[in-house]
Image: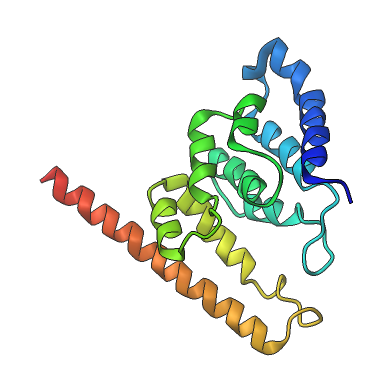
Length: 185
């Protein structure tokens, strides 16, 4: 196994190789979706999920469930900072727009952070909220909770966890919207 710092160094060089020349010539011509796709594929690499499937399949599935391009971009990147060696600065250096980096930051859970604090931050960003809703829906979908890998009890716990978090996030967004309405009056 490659030490994490060496993996990060090698992978950063790969991102630079894939994006670098295009970014130097005119990064505005390179779509945010293309940048995010390249980063997701490189960052997740050969990693597998609990079912033995490529880890990158999940962000692609979540992205396909989103409507707007900025949501698709954040969906592709939603696990890279949390689960890989990629940092927010790496995203900026690769040419990801600042508003999208901020949405990725909002959707990235911090070590030791409570669910309540995490969902407060997600709710503060419209794009992060939309992506997180799709992420939780995908994480609790029957296709992902294959009975060959998850016992019926574990499947039920996972579904209940995401249903609870989905309702919590919806309540937080509703409370923020009500507060904004009050401030307008």
